[in-house]
Image (cartoon, rainbow, N blue to C red; front, side, top):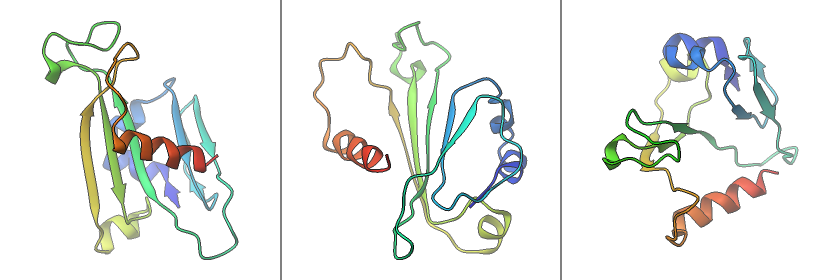
Length: 133
């Protein structure tokens, strides 16, 4: 359940995503509001009942000091990924009127040229994403 217009009123930076790649995963197909140009919605197949339904955000952002390849002279200024998992649906009543849990982490983006082997978290995240279809 996602109310895009509400989310944009709460996080104005979302309204500035026009023309950028944005993929939304929605298990129930209930999406309200006007998505920005270039946004796509993916509806993973779910069983009729009893399914787990994660709510989360994976956001990539380019750091102020990032070079074209995403690296930086100062690691704090390079490209990063933000992972957020929440118990709330992205609706006014869930965000404002209910108690919710939120977990968030920020990690430097891994450059494609990196020789660093994948972490356990990276492997788990890829398996989860591929499970969604």
